[in-house]
Length: 383
Ligand SMILES: Cc1cc2nc3c(=O)[nH]c(=O)nc-3n(C[C@H](O)[C@H](O)[C@H](O)COP(=O)(O)OP(=O)(O)OC[C@H]3O[C@@H](n4cnc5c(N)ncnc54)[C@H](O)[C@@H]3O)c2cc1C
Image 1 (cartoon, helix red, strand yellow):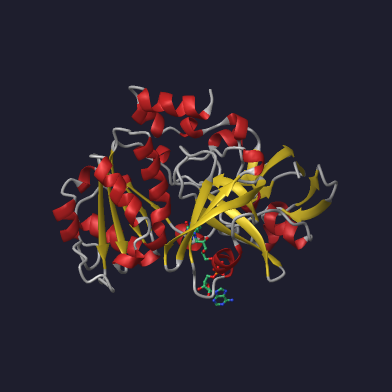
Image 2 (cartoon, helix red, strand yellow):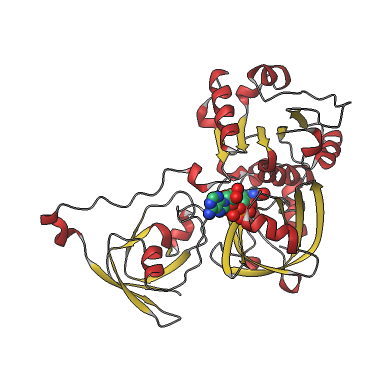
């Protein structure tokens, strides 16, 4: 089934909602792009969204389409100032537009990658990226009624979800409440306004801390509050909530929802800072001296494709040991979230403690995340 057939069948099916919220709907086995696989993207267009936020539109090699779930991110990698820098960016476009992929990047003052992209990424320029990853997607929490809460550049995953639902005309009731500093800082303002006019089941609300130069702003001002939620989204307790934004914003959202009696089990969030997403993956406690010899072993790691090998202690992660041995493995978050270091273990066994960066079916296929796996025998990796 080609992309058009697939999406048409999704839209016309009686169970379209189920399929929208199913990861399989967005899978294209013919164009799989693993989160550990690097592809070269070519910038084909850029659009300024606000004074410091720009969207970059990319095409794949030979026009090959992309497959991903709305809400997922890619990990881009570039040589900046003589070193390889990798950063994650949410795909802001929907999978319903499979021939291009967009990221929407806010300039971070003093930031390496965001400023490099703004200053260098122009039509015709290429960029390396690892494939889609992340579980902040409609399939992670299927629901007919959703409340999307975002602030600043946290709008991007929710925009991809909204665009996908809108373009498929799905019977999905979405309230999209975005917080911005001023009306001039609202990302995707015109497109969201257009979509909400055209779709009765999409309600877009924007709240601005101040009006900036737009003195005739007639939307709500101030910060998101329980009073605003009660007034504008009175049925918010019935909605699956997806939140993305700076850490203080997400803490405030959690507190407001708790005070308002929203079920925390129906709350999902994405952080743009991995350190805030999870407790750091802890190194195992150092065993007492008498048990140390028994608890700790030295194993050999062989890389099947490159022919390299190194030895490592069983209490290290494979990624850390590889770095120490001078072997460069693709990686980004080091927290078992992003999936960039996903690698097939061809022989031997490992103990993996991940944070959602790998799916069960990938584990079943023998893939493991090197940043959070420790060997329990000699191993051979597909590298
Ligand atoms: C899953 C995920 C999705 C994301 N999606 C998006 C998205 O859609 N859009 C988006 O804009 N961003 C997104 N991000 C954030 C993005 O990955 C980057 O973190 C962001 O662009 C900043 O990267 P940078 O290289 O420009 O900044 P960095 O170089 O990482 O710097 C970040 C900050 O640290 C400071 N800093 C850097 N080095 C030092 C130092 N040595 N000492 C003191 N301070 C220092 C910088 O001044 C800056 O303020 C996402 C992140 C994640 C994890």
